[in-house]
Length: 250
Ligand code: PEP
Figure 1 (cartoon, rainbow, N blue to C red):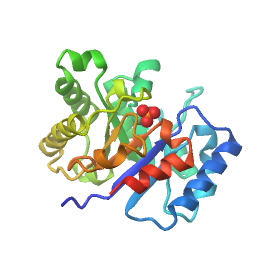
Figure 2 (cartoon, rainbow, N blue to C red):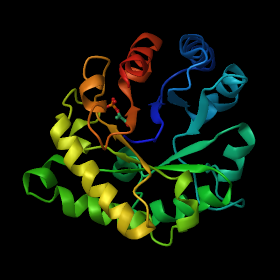
Figure 3 (cartoon, rainbow, N blue to C red):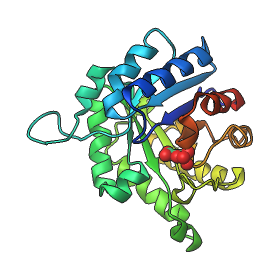
């Protein structure tokens, strides 16, 4: 049996005003209560981080940013440094989400710089990897995921492995309502776990699944041995569905 604490992380993407963010965070804190079986993480947009931090204060719910820049400070208009995210109360930072890779040009080198910057600020990276539909249809899933994992983690200090979380998010499953089958997810998670064992000397690292997770499919996905939780987009925007996923996670 794995000793890894499962994690359910909600990626709110570019949604929620301040008032909406406060209310959603409050409802989740109330619903989660003193839950320790699952680590619950919220990733609001930058503008709502401070408000969400205030709402979750004193609870077991943790705060996460959706991205970061890698520099500590300077003339980088529009960018946010990892130290600023630590200052506002973040514990985690999502790095390399496919929407960042697709719309903002984040390549593996940028992802790697961000991973190191997040560590340097004392935070924990949730590094996302995953293949497109075309890559899966061409039989390239393993090769693509392997390259993203190895490049994204280049130079990752083995001693910091406890701070690392990986999210396997097949691009074709994100926001589409098409979920990977538990078997499809498990085989890629297993590949990632073996890669982590080879490169970091330990397989004891949490690997989340992301891609149209709902309260209805969460239990079967989470029953797979190498799935340690979920990164949830759409279903994290309403307290009832997000809490339903947490409740379905064992
Ligand atoms: C995501 O954005 O990380 C995600 C998995 O989105 P969704 O749950 O909406 O597919």
